[in-house]
Structure formats: C-alpha cells, structure tokens
Image (cartoon, rainbow, N blue to C red; front, side, top):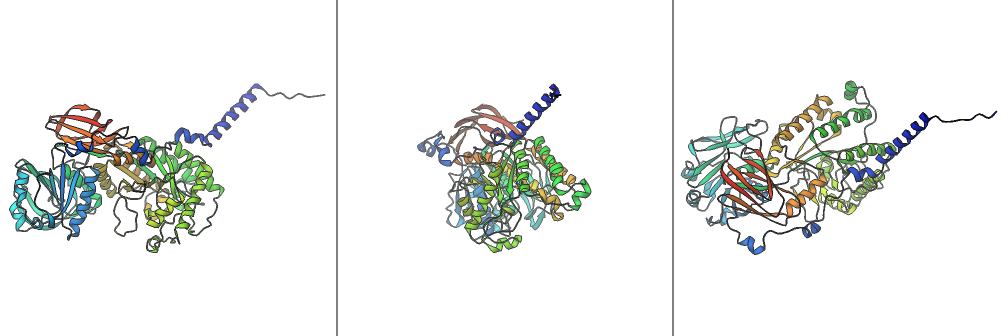
Amino acid sequence: MKSSFKLSTQVYVMLAFMLVMALGIQATRSDAILQLKGAQNHVSNLSQLKQDETNALTAAQVTTLPQERRMLVLFDDTDPASTKIRNNADHMLTYMKINHDLVNVSTFSGETSKYSGVILTMSSLGKLPDNRWIDSYVHNGGSLLLTSMPQLDQDLYQYYRKMGIIELGGYLTSTGLELTSNVLLNDKNAHYSAALIQNGSVRVRLGKDSIVHAVSDEHVPLLWETPYGKGRFVVFNGSMFQEKTSRGLLSGAMTLMNRDVIYPVLNVALMYIDDFPAPIPAGTNDKVYKEYHRNTVRFYKDIWWPDMLKIMAEHNFKLTGVVIQTYNNQVKPPFGQYTDADSLNLTLFGRELIKQGGEIGIHGYNHQSLTTQSRISDSFGYNVWPDQKSMADSIATVASFIHQSFSNYKLTTYVPPSNALDQDGREALKRAWPDLKTISSVYSEDPENRSYVQEFEVSADGIAELPRISSGFMTDEFNDWATANAMTSLGVFSHFVHPDDILDPDRSHAYNWEQMRDMFDKFIDQSTARYPWLRPMTASEATAELQRYQVSEPHFVYGSNEIDGYINHYTAGSLYYVLRTDRKITSQTNCRVTRIDDESYLVEVNADTFKLGLGGNAQ
C-alpha cells in the first residue's frame, strides 16, 4: 500500500516565513545595507570643489571693499611667551577669517590707522618702541587687547587707569577660573578648579565702568573690558593664552574688541570609537564577570555595544569606528591572516555601526604606531617599524581584511594608534591607501612631543587634518574646558572613547561599566543640551564640511544698522557663522538666524551674499 505525504498549509506558511527571514538576513549581510545606510561619497577633491564654487566679489571689489575690518598682532620674537600667544592669535584669527597682520615690535612704526583692533602679546608696554599712540588710538575708536598679565613697570603706570584699573597690587599665582559672562558660549557661571587652571596675575581693583568676564578663586579679575573714549581696552590678567586649549577664551576676548562680530564655524559633532571593531579578548575579566556574569565577548555583545547604541540614538550622534585587525606586535611583513572569529566580529559590529548611520575607518593592522622613531615607539612600549614599506604593507593588509566583509565600502578615515604618527608613517599611509581623505588625531598640545598634533585644515596634499578634542567615558574637568573652548572658537564637538577602558584598572579606576556609562551619558547629555544646534556627523561628512569651510572666503561690511556678507569660493549648501552682538536682529536676507546664547546667534547662510539688519540693543 502506498502512503502519501502532504504538507499542511501551516507548514507552507512556516517555510515561506523562514525563506523570507533567510533572505532578510542575507540582505543585511550583503553590501546592499551600505547603499541604504552607509553614505560614502561626502568627500570631494578640492579641485572639483573649486569648479563648483561661486564668487560674490571680484578681486578688484575685494580690494576696495569699504569698512572691512583688519587686526594687528604685535609680538616680541625674543620672548617665548609672546611667540606662543602670537601663534595662537594667528591661528584663531585665521579660523575666524579675520584679516590680520603679524608685526614684530622691533619693526613697528606706530601706524594703526587701518586697524580696527590691536592685539598685544607682550606683558610689558615698554617693549613697544613708542607707546604714545595707544591713548589716541583707543580714544578715537580703536580697541586694544592685552593678552598677557600686565608687567608692573613705568609704562603700565601711564595707562593702568585708562584700562579700568584703579588700584595695583603685586604679582601672584592665581588659581581657578569662574566665568561671569558667556565669553565662552553657553558657559556663563562655569567654574574650573585650581587643579586645571593656574595663571601668573597681578592683583588689581577695577573701576565701576569695567565689565568683568572672568575671575580667579582669589577674586582677582582675569578678563575685563573698559570703555575709553570711543574705543575700549580688553585686558587678560593671566598667562594661559600661551596654551592651545585656551584658544576659545582668546577668541571670546577678541569678540569683545568690537560691538558686532561675525565669524565662521564648522558646526559639527563627532564621536569616535578607537579599536572598534577589533578582536575581543577571549576568556573572562574578573571585574566584568563579577558584575555581569558574562565572559568578555558576551559582555561586549550583550551589554557594552547595546548601551553605546542606545546613548548614540538618544543624542542623535553618528559613530566613526576605526578597525584594528590584530593585537600582535608584528612590524615586519608578511603579515598574518585574520581568523574567522575576527571576521565575524567585524561583520557583526561593523554592519550595525553602518546601519546606525556611522562610518568605518582604519586604526591599524595592529596597535603599533606608524613611526620609525624609536623614541616614540619605546615610550608606548611598542615596536619600531623598520621602514615605510613595512608600514604600508600593514595598512594594505588591514584594508584587505575589511574589504572581505565590506567589498564595496570606501575607507577614507585613519586614526593613529595612541595618536602617534610621524612623517614616515604619514607617507606610508598615502603609499598604501589612495582613498585616504582624513586623519583624526588630537588637537591639544603634547608636552612630551609624541602625539600627532593637528589643526583643523586640509593639507597641501589634500588630506584633511580633523583632530579630536576630548576623550574618555569618565567625568573629566579637562573635557569640559576643552569642549567649551572648541565650541566657542570652532563650533566643533569631537570626542573619542576606547571599548577596553572597562578592562583596564588604570583607566577605569574603581568604576564599573554602569558607572562609566552613566558618566559618559551625562557628559554627552550636558554637551548636547548646551549646544543643541550642532550637526552630528561621521568623520567623512565632517571632512566635506571642513573642505567647504576652508575654501570659503567671507568678507563682511559692518554698517551702522546692518552687516553685509559676501562669500567668495562659495559652494552650494549651508555655511555657518557665529554672531556676537548686543543688538536686535531686525532682518535676514539669504540666511537664517538662531539665538544660541545671550547676545549670541548661529547664522546659517545659503547664498554667496547675505544681509543682517541690526536694531537697538537686544532685550
């Protein structure tokens, strides 16, 4: 007897459902997800960008533009402190796209008629060959910024009352800093401790006409402005303008020199995860296992990564993750092949990162900084690379490893391990990686001279230097200070973390992951609350904005009731500016103005010309 076998309708439905699920899973494992979520073509060649730009003014019109401001920076090249302040002032005026001249005091003639403001980087007015111009220059409408603690000498005694000082005391080391205004955007009333801030200062008592913007813990005025005639003196009674991380306060002091000031900002928010995706250590970590009863791999997959995705989603951040293929110490080719486990982790975490709107870049084949200098390698306990070719081969290896999982993905961003990279390493990157567009290291100075310290700029070879500002999961006062300064001067929030901080007792201290996560979440929450206008981006997206920011050439004409803006080398899309003014905005042409703080506005410009109408004092 033959028996027949028939499938029920329910079974067919189940099989169809399983087939659909399988196809869906396969789709998420295919490069189709990259086209859906992984934007890959943000970065242009500067030559192409220049083909698309427009000019609001001809070269002849620029030279005859009325009332365009120009600043003078006076420095003493025999004084290291003056030279450091000059460098910071030069960078800030360049970022703010304010025309300026740098003049050594030894060659200064005293001619100031073409300058709307003069910045002195020396402590002593006696360094000037002749300082008698100061009185008439400021009284007739000029502004003078003293960027360093005034030196107690006969030259100061000639001018101190005009600077708003009614009583002078002796020198002291002042500690801490409290902001009594929003000279740093959205940072009024913020206090920074003596552990972070110290200045060489002079004890002073100010008159009632002076407006104080910062004081020390000893109640010593650190930054103030005082009207004098039609102009004003702005005085910084400290030494910290020598430091790169204080550039925001320096730029804020510069905006006090004139009643209305507008300057460009990048307006971007960046978040990096170094060493991710990367091999996860096998086995268990006692600290993690005690808290979560999971081995290290399961902790990252079940706890750490979902927490990170949740925080990013809540604050609308995009992640830039940079891959490490292996943690071996090999610096000579041939370089080893990846394991199935490493490939699986890359695929799993990488695709979720891209689906989140993020970007994958390269950290390295391994975690050995690309340098042929043993001084740098030895300081980190790394092996020194023998030559450029070995470094280039390692980068080609990790790129091939990534392309095994992401065959059509264009890698453009590099983050140097331990933020160290020398010129040989940079050349090796270019040699092995034609698609390299961005290097993201650090902005802050390194007293040990090991780090690859950057400015925000596109280098002559077309590679964007896009440094990070702050780092870590835990509460850190330096992060708050660095963030406030970068936001005021550049309109940039850029932070990075390491997944393995929780595994390292020196980096996690006594905190567990839940505590570190909550501190990190609080830092991000406070930052986004203070700067809600920022645009979350990946590194490649921010690089495209940096290119447009750098090539643009804005010119501003300040009238009695308006500011006219003209942008040469303008490319289609929005450019952003910060406007500091105590006046009402009465009209907006080709721009959109958003109030971001007291007497402070974000101006979004969408054409190569724009106009802002200004009325009386803002309420």
